[in-house]
Length: 68
Image (cartoon, rainbow, N blue to C red; front, side, top):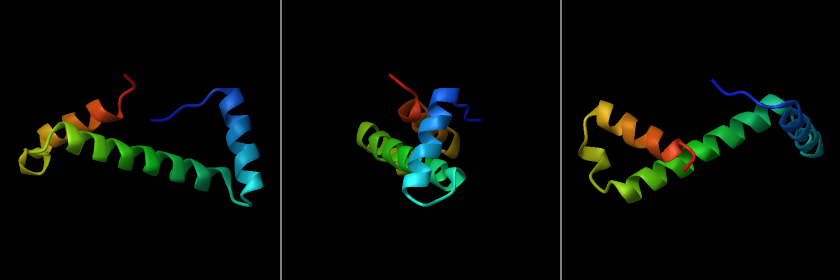
């Protein structure tokens, strides 16, 4: 689940309008980009990521996705 403050929602709506797209589309782009960046970070931190069990992979990805 993702939640935003009113200020963040206003920024997303303003940016989406500037890009001539719906706020949901911009949010999806932001979230997918963040997840992709986290996957790359997890792979760099755990070179054996692809050989791990699904549960271990999920933990590594969530750890990488979390704010430090």
